[in-house]
Length: 160
Image (cartoon, helix red, strand yellow):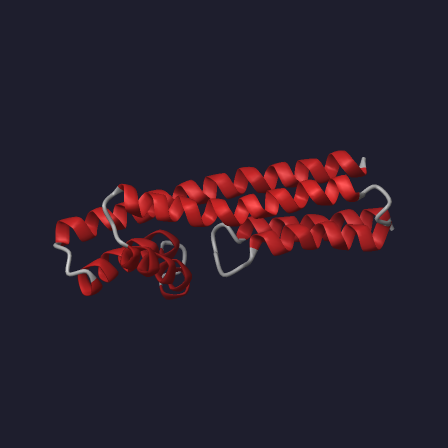
């Protein structure tokens, strides 16, 4: 039964990393889901309060990193809150409208269009906001990937 638990957890973890590319997939839910499925199939004996406390802290870090990195990137490049919202909408819609490349083009275009439409920024400033959105998104992906890898590493340490 243990190997089934490992496979189920690994599938959840793989889907979580896929969520870095398709942000509609809630990565952290799949990471925690992998822990829960493993625990249900094998027993929660090795996952005590310390394990769950660490994972809750990392989960909070994941949510915070995602938001802060995107907003920091946009603000650092002179964008506004409208650019942040446009970037978020573009991030969610981009992969569906333009498969594969939409994950990069969507946030960029969303930030640029929002800046042009809602703040009446010039094209140059709107373009800079789009670049900031892209930098923030890529930073966020890198941080989330690292935090998720650490979460999974902690999981492996506790159950082995």
